[in-house]
Length: 215
Ligand SMILES: *[C@@H]1O[C@H](CO)[C@@H](O)[C@H](O)[C@H]1NC(C)=O
Image (cartoon, rainbow, N blue to C red; front, side, top):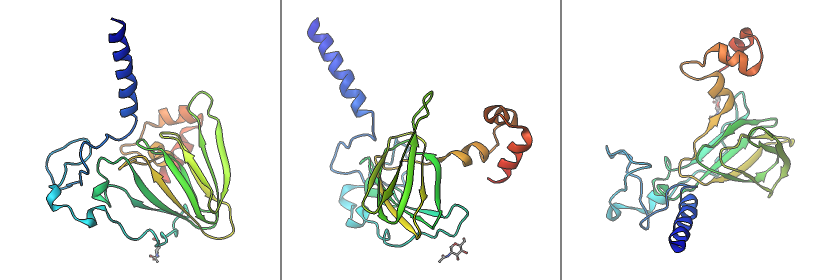
């Protein structure tokens, strides 16, 4: 009896670890076949005999992103959409460019923790812990510094140097996703009821309408 409970306990611990990230591969690789009509969690595997080096390849993270936009930042993705070989592997990468004063606004990745390193310039970075504490954990980073954003938590970056800044980040998901708070809350389709937003932000509906018009 005791050994059965022990086994169940061990099983529970193992399961919680396995389910805490993308599914672990059951073969060497499962290169995504985005054309398959079969819907699975991730992508169906391409025939391994047809797999080529280019399925595991991406070029262009040396190219600066265009930061001529209202946020002054640009993200270049290297996720499963760009690299089919990432399917089922639970990792991906991005390059982030920041103009002077450029910002990556508060956002979360629903399917990945992030580890970011500064290649050029200086960034103020931070994340906020979940309710009710909502503690801001932040730091100024310089070239070569590394910072971690735990999965699901709202985080941001801001260029606090004099010139452009560049960061490379790795994420623990083939398709970590991005949920930008301002866009999601004030720019959803169809919009969230103004009653809800006015109460949530404790402002009048005129301010809600003004914010919605930005997104
Ligand atoms: C960068 O983006 C701006 C705004 O969309 C555009 O006008 C400009 O041509 C782009 N620059 C380059 C080099 O692509």
